Every structure is written in structure tokens, then in C-alpha cells.
Image (cartoon, rainbow, N blue to C red):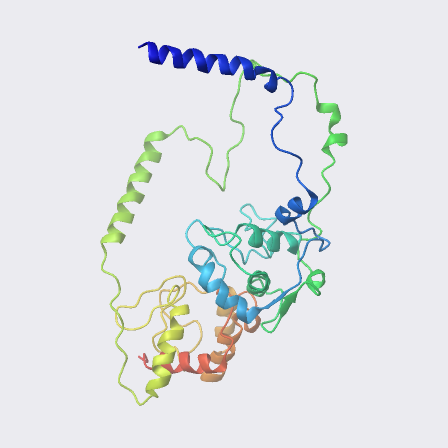
Length: 352
């Protein structure tokens, strides 16, 4: 016991003797040197200050994005589950439920570059090369229809890129404009006689509801539906129809079609997803698949007599958003003619 008592006394004595060293400044370390600060300073300003020399193309960006980013943000920057969407949302900022993406909301491209460079990929931040960062940002721009597929982003043309919402932000002047609202001592208790809910969130559904029983019943119904959906048998892997088609093209088309399978199914047992089933699409009239709700532009094209022959289908697959303004399809398009030919050949094997 005496041994532990001596240890406690010695420790207490040491703390008393050391106390003056902690009075005022701690006296630990030294000021960081300018070169040490520079090594950690990765800021990139809207005017391009801080951008390193480098470049990256949309084509390379698609490959790098697929490897590092698609698992969370989708192959086409459309987002996966609750991970952020990086593309889309054009013209939605005035809606009740705006879609804020790099293309629709962010005012400066430097924000995108800085964030990717500093924080991505998830779990392995700052492991990508400078050129890969440029390439990823180029692909994100392309996914938002802000650049063409042959675009190459670099530190030299960085400021030439115009972001759609560049004028949508104002300088925060609340320090002066709202100074008359401030009080020397903020109210921290009993600031109001009563607190009442005067408005309800119509879109986000975050306002507490009084009808708890009804909400609970709805939640149970939804949970049951999710369970039943999980129990459902997945669509069987489609079997190609035996037709006289180039086997090499079929094989390549099946590989490329993996980019489409998130939204489209083919073969026996195929079901509508975000997009319609594509059985018999080659040579079929546009917007004619039963049970699928087409966009207004697609309905208009169908009314004008659009037929998905190989020429029209190839043009659509190359640049869907350019081919049909307002299409709901978020796919950026296939850049290689060989891939387009292969996919069309693959789709031919599933003719009705």
C-alpha cells in the first residue's frame, strides 16, 4: 500500500512543480514555418488561385469516375441511394423541392475541384493524381451538359468554364444589414410565452404529425411492401434469341449494356425500372411500350412518328440529352461508335 501512496505523492508533487509552466502560455511547440503551412494549404479560390498545373479529359474522367466515384454517385453522376446526385436539376432551384447539383447550384467550379482534390475518394482522400482530379471534374461537367465529350479541363482553361448558377449567390452582409436585430445578451430561456406550429413542411415531411397512429400504420405498410419486394424473385438472366448476329458484337454489346441495366431490362421476365423494358426496341415506334410512363418530349416524338431504327437509336445512344431535349434519361451517352453498334446488335437479339 505504501508503494502506491508514494507514487501518488510523487505524481502530485510533479504536477505542483510543473504548474508554473502551464500558467499563461503552454510553452509547447513552435510557430509553423511558411513552407510547412504551404504543404497543407490546398485551397483553390474561385479566381483560380491555388490551382496546380495539370489537365484531364472527359474520356479519361469517365474511366476514373467509374473506378473511384460511381459506387456512391452512380455511373452517370446520378447518385446512388442517399449519396449525392452530382448531375441534373437544371431549372429546379425555384421548385419546392430543388435538386442542387454541381451543374444546377454550385456557383464556382473551384468548389468542385477543391472538394474532389481534398476529400475524395471516400476513405482514401488525396490519393488521386492532379490529372485524375481534373479528369473527374471534366466528366462531372460533361454529365451536366456543360461541356462536350471531347473537352479537356486544365489550369489554363479552368476559368473559361461558366457555371449556370454563378450569379445565384450574394455577398453575406448580415453583419451590417441585420445589425439592428442583435442584442448584447441573447435570450436563452422563457423567450416566448408559447410556441406553436404555424406552418408545415410540405415537401420534406419533417414537421411532426399529431396523427401518430396513422403515420405508424403508413410506416408499417411501407415496411411490409419493402419486405415483399425483397422476397420477390429477381428477374431471370435473359437468354439471347438465336439470330444470325455477329457473336463478337453480341459479347461486346452485353458488356456495354451493363451501363444500361440500372434502368433497363431485356429478355424474358423483364420489368420496367426507371426506364422501360427494351425487348423489340430496334425498329419499334417510340414511346410504345405498354405500362411505362414516358416523358412529354418522348410522347411528342412518338406523336411525330419517331421509329427507333438503327440510325435514330444510334444518335440517341450517343447523346440522349442533345438528341431529345428534356428527356428523363440521365445517361450521358456512349462515346464510341463501336460500343453503340455493339449495344444495338445486343438489343436486336431480344426482338419480340
